[in-house]
Amino acid sequence: MTDMLVELIQNFIGGSESTLNSLFNGMLNLVFFIERELMYIPEGTMFVKARIDFNQIYQIVFNFATSLLVIVFITKAIKTYFLMRERR
Image (cartoon, rainbow, N blue to C red; front, side):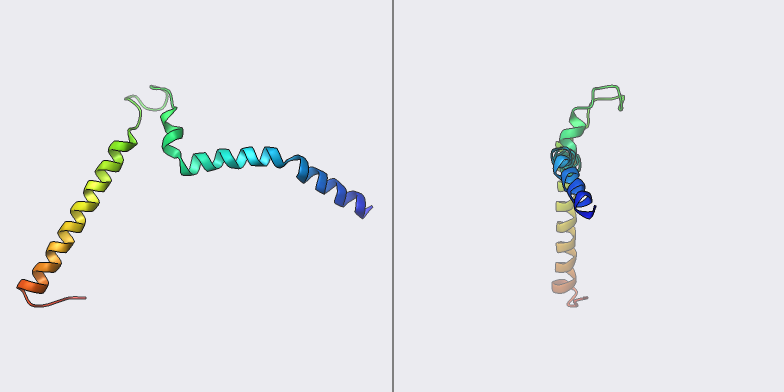
């Protein structure tokens, strides 16, 4: 009886391998490549305006991060070299 049960479980797992692979591939694309998935949303179904432009979002985030790094560097330089004190 236990051999039949083990064989049934093995057959079930072996038969569902292709289904699980396609499910995990779909989840992988949805999680790691969300911009590709959102680009295929037809216009007007979810958003009234045009589709989301991820390149523009990436550019804004990059510009903000660069500006923040420059500001931190300048404040550190002013505190260290002009005010002669360093705060950690």
